[in-house]
Amino acid sequence: PDWNNQDPLHRGHMQDLRTILVQGIRESVPRGQNIGKVFSEHQKKDETPTEWLEWLRKNLQLYSGLDPSTPVGEVLLKTQFVARSWIDIRKNLEKLGDWQNRGLDELLREAQKAYVRREDEKE
Image 1 (cartoon, one colour):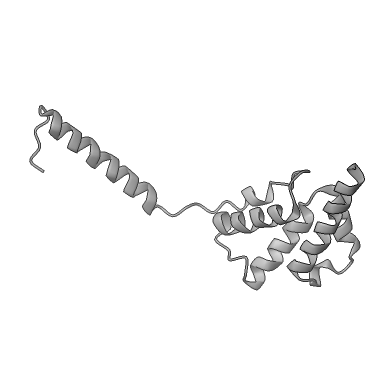
Image 2 (spheres, rainbow, N blue to C red):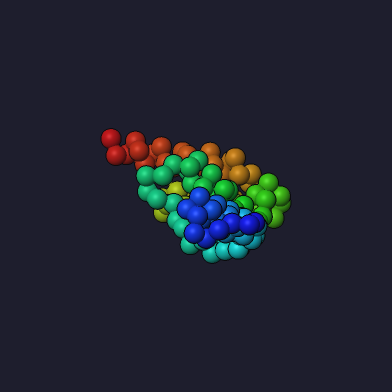
């Protein structure tokens, strides 16, 4: 463009162009895959199993590029859901024995039961 550096209006246009270019470059670069971010987190004590599973599902897709609805994604999601759950919930899920062969809905239901039991014991 034929802009004059001395003209304040043109300087504003140049600044806008720089901002747009930088933003375009940032958005065009693919996000790095950092699956360690998903695997480093644990369920918090006051976090419900449903919230935890949704957090895992969203971040697994975001940081690994894996679709949690595929067989590989579902196995990874189940493993992380059980392994990274709060202690009492994890123990209950591991007691199921063949939790690897169960559906995610069934694991979530069992985790919910353990969570509710914990809440009942508080009262």
